[in-house]
Image 1 (tube, rainbow, N blue to C red):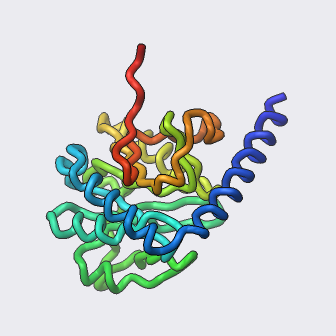
Image 2 (cartoon, rainbow, N blue to C red):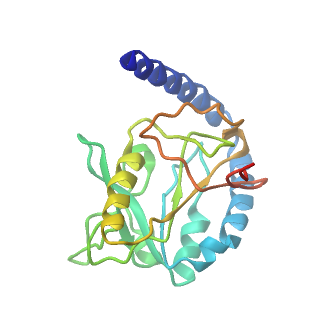
Length: 224
């Protein structure tokens, strides 16, 4: 019975991914940029963003998702430490977050899979600090991508499980150190936000704490 439920969940996720990819690729670049500007203004005004010192933010694909260029520029220009995701073991679906030091470092990053910029593991001959390194201060906030979200704050990723695996491992490490986990803030185009319960989710799928859309902020509904 559990195997059948797992198969059904995978099928539901695959169907939603297919439909969302089709929808997102149909959006014009002008529409995505307009929504991205509104999302950026709201994100930068969030109290949890303004309080943060160490922030991870994904570097966006050239199309079909929120453009985070202005977000990462603001992180650097306001003196926060910026960390960006990089796959470290594709076979096992493992990633970590690597520090970007300044705007020049950011501009020099090569493009990898899906046209996404990714850092090398070294910078100026030295190993880049990573979020998982025991000498690195904990992340305060992670700005997360996704294909779809719903109003219960469920998230559908691209299907590789990178964020879910990282969060499980990183949170366990922080808990052992008696440190708090980072706030999880998703950014989403309005077309990516569905009604509560419409994103299929299993036990291993992480919900986010906040969703920032061009129309405002979604947070957990108050308990009755």
